[in-house]
Image (tube, rainbow, N blue to C red):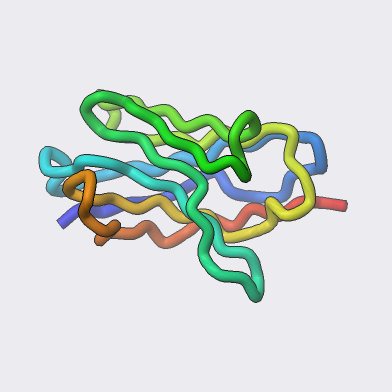
Length: 119
């Protein structure tokens, strides 16, 4: 199993920045990719990007491209989600999740981190 723990959530002002962390433990050697997702109140879960664990290849959907940055620290087994120029709509619970291959579904999920835009 893989255990994922998100941290770094909180209240942030419009236009500000926030960095979330996802610390992985357990069966880390079998991880292929780590994805970030978010779920706003009353909405479906939305994919906001992913990074492959070994190569560091990154993909962002158009909805966050240019404002979100994913990175990793393999030595610490941590993946980061840097969010900048925060706008309305960013308020959500953010989750990291792990998949064992390129085609595999995300099977292990963190508990989520709440991000709230202050207006």
